[in-house]
Amino acid sequence: MAPRQAVLFDFDGTLADTADDLGAAVNHLRRQHGLNDLRVAEVRPYASMGARGLLRVGLGIAPEDPGYLAMRSAFLDRYDERVCVETRLFPGMAELLRELVRRGIAWGVVTNKSSRFTPRIIAGLKVTPACVVCGDSTPHLKPHPAPLLLAADQLKLAPEKCFYVGDDLRDIQAARAARMRPVAVEWGYHSPDNVGPRDWNAEAVIAAPEELLKLL
Image 1 (cartoon, one colour):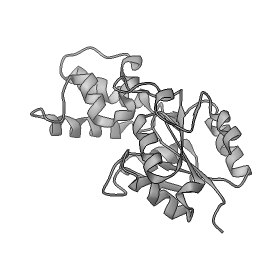
Image 2: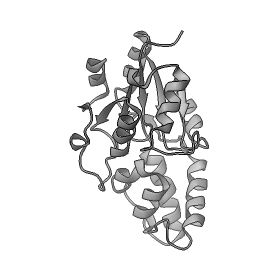
Image 3: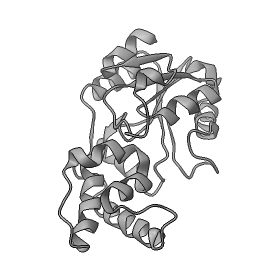
Image 4: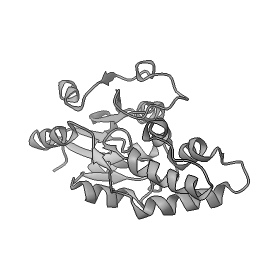
């Protein structure tokens, strides 16, 4: 039987704190290039932006630059070696997930992170989402609605019955485009390229995971 409603989460910066492991991969490359390590606090704001943002802050290289693809491949290989060493659920998230299950509300993950990494991290965190949609699950990445619509289809729910929770403007844009209920979080990796979450036209902005329960 399909659930009556669902909560779908962005992954990096919303459900899980992956910044330490991503930062370690960046610093590995920096050391190879004779550069000092960056502090995690310097990397954290870019962690939701994937390799593109992390290589920009870590090595000053952009997708249009020569050598970017090779550097991206090297970064992903380094990350692959320690994909879930320091990664943890954000504080309060485990309790929220247990309460969703207790209430019979399905929860899942919709992320731009590739299937090369996401299932392994989810297994390492010992959580069991009802669906997982990765960045290579559809031809499109968020803010396109296709990944969110695929998750709703897998749960056999109308998009209007789903909340989508994220820490980036594109999460809210994707939720709006998919006709889901967008919720922005204040604890994530908010990119310096974006205005703050209260300016994203989300249905709600929450400061802690348990605040989501008031919306259900």
